[in-house]
Structures are given as structure tokens and as C-alpha cells.
Image 1 (cartoon, rainbow, N blue to C red):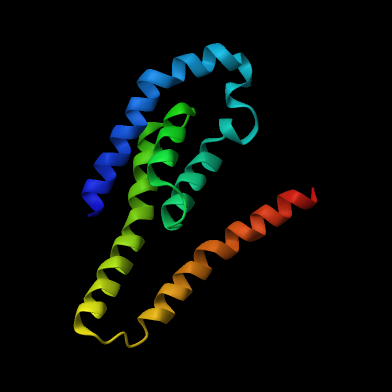
Image 2: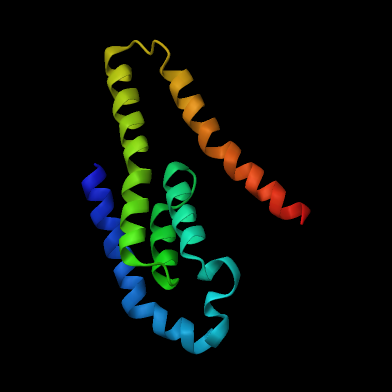
Length: 130
């Protein structure tokens, strides 16, 4: 699952980069990478975080990252690092569902959800107060 997701994400990234980056730069000029969109660290963190959140569109994030100036290798690493926890959780939950015994699986999923969403919520609140 993780390898297939990684290949699909890299393909979407490269399609957006080859087809869409040029028109974006023509349309927006110097503003194409304005603010956080020009920061490699911020973009890498955004890709990594989006991979951990199940409600963020996987494909849309891959295409959006391809339109940004994010380096391909950073995208690949952030995507793979973000996919691994989700793959583990899905495999574990699926295994527990087949066996019919959850034995704390709900707490693992809840803990991972909180560990992912709380830092993002704090960042959003901090940037809103500025």
C-alpha cells in the first residue's frame, strides 16, 4: 500500500510540475512563491502533515505541491514518512476488524489523530493571533 501510494503521489507531483508550473509562473510572476509557498521547510511540513490527516485529499495535495517550488526529493520523503503511520494504522485496524477484537485499537487511532491535529491546530491559532 505504501509503495503504490508513493508512486501515485510522485506521478501526480511530476504531472503538475511539467504541465502546470510554467503557466502558474506566467500568470503570477514573482508572486508565484509568495510567503510560505516559497519556504521549502514549510512546504515539506505541509505535505507531511497532509499525509497524516485522512480528510485531506491525497491527490489534490500532490498536484498542489507539484505547482509549488517544493523540491521533488523533499516531496518524496515527506510523502513516504507521512504514509507509513497511516499504512500501519490501516493494517492494524483491518487485522483487528477481521479478528473481531479491537483491544485498544480505538485508543491508538484516537492518539494518532490527536498527535497529528493538535500541533496543526496550535500553529493555525498562533498564526491567526499575529
